[in-house]
Length: 389
Image 1 (spheres, helix red, strand yellow):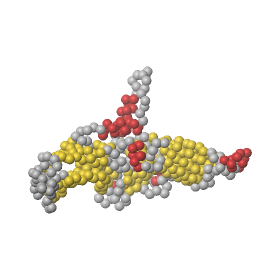
Image 2 (cartoon, rainbow, N blue to C red; image 1 turned 30 degrees about the vertical axis):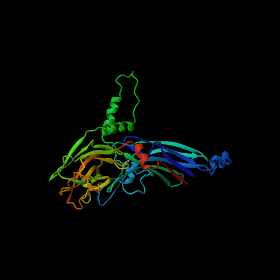
Image 3 (cartoon, rainbow, N blue to C red; image 1 turned 90 degrees about the vertical axis):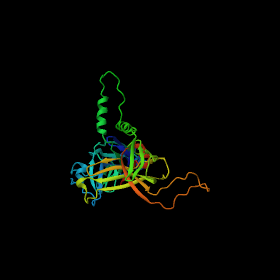
Image 4 (cartoon, one colour; image 1 turned 120 degrees about the vertical axis):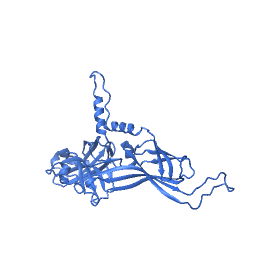
């Protein structure tokens, strides 16, 4: 029996443009005693295992809700996944959906012979292009990435080992990489060159610069009957895991606000001709802050962005946007603040109020964070094992 063990050197989360490194180990699980007994007749020993070949590949699989999405016509899944119909290695075999990206298959070895207890390790490296869609699990469209390792023993069927990975896409990263590459070319060949940054380091520096800029934006939220509140948002671009921080100023309000709620929402839209039924938008809520604010002059907002969600992106068939959804409960009934406390020591609110609800949406942008932070949060396995009998 052959044990095939694959292990990612880093973790299961990557940025498009980064390199995936995977160690693939093939081990003959037979005991050493059988090898000692048959040392002089290696070719005739039944304990020796022969593998015909092994190959590895990365592919992105797109699954759609056919009631909502019309997927563009494309070649067969086998032809896309392998680049040819002349090979028996089909990594997407048995899966429903469409292959939207597939790397070229890389052969790890051909005709491998393993003695009892012997193991051999191969390194699989592949760079994820920057033009691919990100990993996404939506209502109408899903993108899933997998590393597929296929192996076959002589006169046996092909076995596949799949390791799911998560891919983030950083918008405009290609242009940033070109600029960094141009700056890295030394003008004087005799000067020592600085250490070369990896794609992940460049991407994270770019995200730090993009999301750390604080430019306070003020919004005067009004109703047809008057002013409700003045809202301040320190910035409009956030990384996964950050807190969305803002302030509410009711000092100049002309309409009393009893309570408010703020919800972080995603809006998935199926684009153009890809929509099957015309209902192209689906909105989902994630985290929410709710507070009573009657007679408050100021209060603040602190809304955490989940780490496991997908940042803003746009592909050929779907676009994902993010927004803050505000709901204000207003009252037309005057509620005066008592000048002095009642004898009991507490102020009693009126039992009935005439209220109406006002809603308001504020678009924001979400960006990826460091892959290690996401990997620690989702706790996805970075290795897998397959047995060839």
